[in-house]
Image (cartoon, rainbow, N blue to C red; front, side):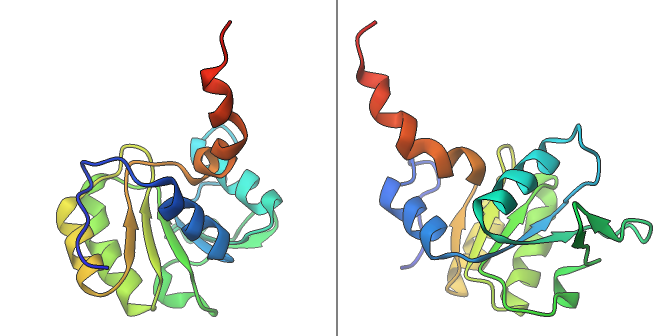
Length: 152
């Protein structure tokens, strides 16, 4: 598959294929704070049927929405399809290496999370990369996208 140009919009099929084939999503930067964007995304993805694995290094955060929290990707006890990242862009490179280490299939940077070096590292290891996108939004896009053409 090789290196993508992440300045180009992602093809719908590329995103749909990732979201359809994935079952397990590890969310790095998951928060127990209900007011945080990551909490809402975690909730919707979980309710949609994904096996969500919250990852948060804080020792006092043991579960979010009844799901066991892992302190790092390395501690996760099952295969991970997507590593979804709610962290600063500069953290993405280190997370890319961790995602490779656990055999993840996709590295997904949330809106505002883009690091081209991290993308190169992941793609060179055969991992698909999505950056600066929200899976919750992409998941529901097919339902509203066709309606954008409607005349008011």
